[in-house]
Length: 71
Image (tube, rainbow, N blue to C red; front, side, top):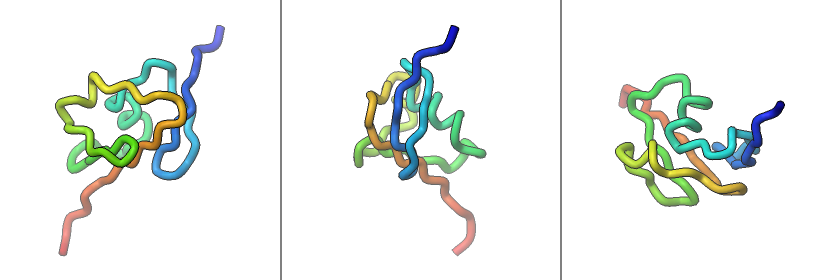
């Protein structure tokens, strides 16, 4: 039995994620690190405290940004 998937655009690439996935789930599936990460959903920043509650919909655009140390 296959798990239903939702198609999202993550950092400009089409990705399939499990239906019902939260922003936190998407970050876990795509980001190598979790410190210094910021997320925007359809151009709006999602506060880290909301990652576990916000569920992207089919076709939503998510940008995951990782801060790089240095100057």
